[in-house]
Amino acid sequence: MTIVRTLGVASVLVLVAACGGESSEDAPPQAPTSTPASETPPPAEPAPAAAATDTPAAASASAAPAETPAPPKTVSVDFIAKSGSKLTGTATLSEQSDGVKVVLEVAGIKPGEHGTHVHETPDCSAPDAKSAGGHYNPDHHDHALPTTAERHLGDLGNITVGKDGKGKLEIVIPNANLKADDPHSFIGRSIIVHEKHDDGGQPVGNAGGRIGCAEIKG
Image: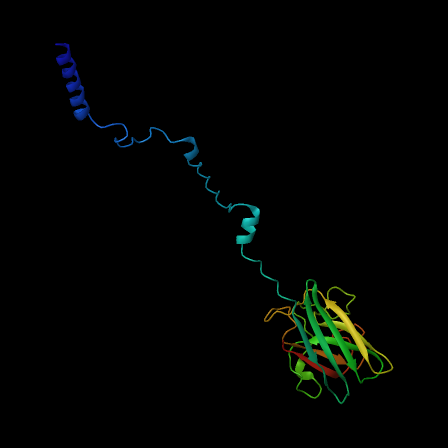
């Protein structure tokens, strides 16, 4: 009786072993419930900040380059001998902030002082230079020497010529300019050198004939 019971229990255990499922070695692996610490991905790097566009440096870089101011205008013209003289030379006019700087250099005439003026028109065609018109006087002042503030705009005073027949005059004429079609412009005029000294008298200084003429055509 005991032997039969033992065999029955053994049979049951064998049946359970055969039908009771797979062993732990044959079961598929289960997914891990957590990521190991060694496999944790590194934290994402922060996105780089956008380049600032409103800083002074950025603003100045984006700003258009400043325009380079134009250089002062300069005109150089040659004298033509008139009234039988042997005068040679040049006149250089340079526009600057306080007016026009006039530089006259002449040669070939007798020593002493010679009146010089800017005249109305750029025409030296006449043998005596009368084609250049009268003194340039847009403000309708009386004639005077440069020591007088109110005078013809074209009154340049006297150029002093040495024993070698050469002379040089440098003078700045306030309120004059070298702008085309401006009422105070020396462009479109002429410069005359006279045979005598300008004494400042009326109406044009008693300077005598015109012995040199230079057309200022710009």
